[in-house]
Amino acid sequence: MSNDMIFGIHAVKAVLASDPSRFIEVFVLKGREDDRLLPLLNELQMLGITIQQAGRKALDDKAKGASHQGIIARVRPGKQYNENDLDEILAGKDNPLLLVLDGVTDPHNLGACLRNADAAGAVAVVVPKDRSAQLNATASKVACGAAEVVPLVRVTNLARTLRALQDKGVWVVGTAGEATHDIYQSKLTGPLAIVMGAEGEGMRRLTRETCDDLIKIPMAGSVSSLNVSVATGICLFEAVRQRQ
Image (cartoon, rainbow, N blue to C red; front, side, top):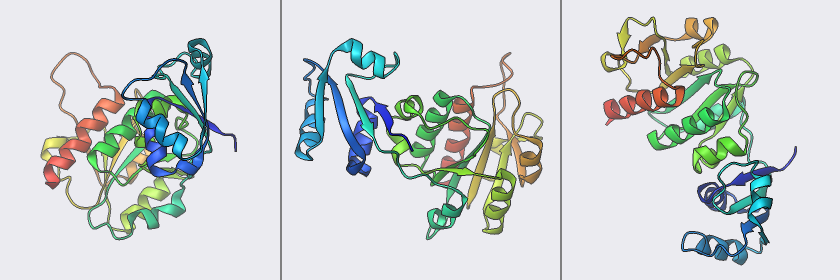
């Protein structure tokens, strides 16, 4: 498996906190020595990680033009999770909250959803193997470190995985425009998986049919739908509110 590039202070800090053995080398902007970067560089140096100074153009090229905040790291890939890891992820958790993304193919959206999931205390984000954005440098940067702490579980058959979760007592709630009640009228307590569909198409038919309940976000304006990461944040935090 090829090595990954991560960029931005949050992403580098998150790998440092979760698994520093993943670092291969770090590139930092020549002459950039500010209060946010210096403690990070000191910690990396203490661990014996190679730090190379680089010009802005070299860093921009490595980050393919994305905002890198003056720091880029080449790292070994993090742990890859699949359906066999769900038992361990759920073990000992009385009231787990999971986020399921059916067909979110934009890495920016994947990163933002991971960030939302981390903030809401979700134990995992579940995606289908074949219809999902890759956890690339862009997704990691947008996730602001959440990609390093929230397990991203890639499953072969999403409907089958949802049924397995139901067998473990997890209530599966899907979001759909045609739902008859909204998120504020629904029960989002207890072991819960919230399923978000792809932008435009929504959930696939089989995913929708597997859900225990369908809910929608009430929309007052002229816009017919929200960006999937915004909708995800709204649904997750309504669940957080109800569970408190």
